[in-house]
Image (cartoon, rainbow, N blue to C red; front, side, top):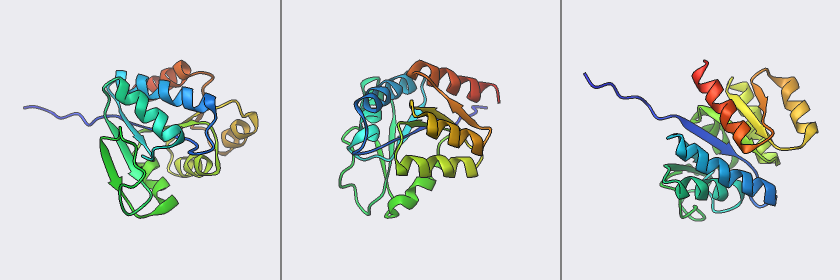
Length: 167
């Protein structure tokens, strides 16, 4: 009997238009490494910021990319998203992003990213924070034990592996 193993989905959440150069570089590398692990990348699907950079990185490594879009059509979708899911839910789609991900990696920080982290905490999802904002790290670590701090992209991938395989 042939057993099917469900693909691991790693969600990368982060700023769109407000993403910093560091956020974009980290997101691209994360996307590449996620694809190289054979995991599926899930983002907000738009062609801006962390979403675009992570998707570009995953595609560069021949990975599978999923984008959960806020609108009622594929307008603004990244050209490297393989599976675009149209929600017509605006920011409420953040809950879909979080619940569909096995692990959430927050790359950078914005109000939308903070809302996704909060939803992940409420749903008992593991979250890896990849940013140098000590205030946000401190705040989220006080909310839940499943918040992990990564100091580099490689650290984030190592934490992801540890969480996935030691559960």
